[in-house]
Length: 142
Ligand code: FES
Image (cartoon, rainbow, N blue to C red; front, side, top):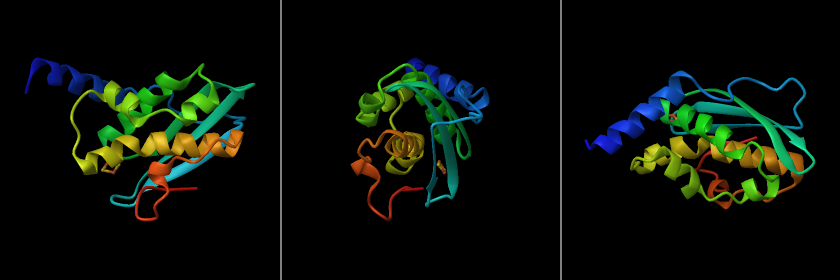
């Protein structure tokens, strides 16, 4: 493993052990939950808006280190950004933060939180649902 990969792994573990944006907003403007049907792991997200800007985001969930760490990283990426812009956020932007190559199974883990966030944005702001997660055998959301 390269020194670089090792560094990214340590960052991922730190997010897993000390998740940023963890918890539930008391008076959210939007809520969504999602599950990875391959493993049953779940993430729920609460969002608050200030106009069209995401002013706060919290998540709870249970799952592997990648799913939890990726969602923790995501909370840091999106606060203060425009809801419609985040609804179009390419998955590559989050994967770049994660920084290590992922197998297809691990990719689903990494994108669970992003999918849930986009569903919450759809509920709160009517932004388009993410195409990546529309197929029924993929990640499931409500
Ligand atoms: Fe379930 Fe990663 S193993 S989300």
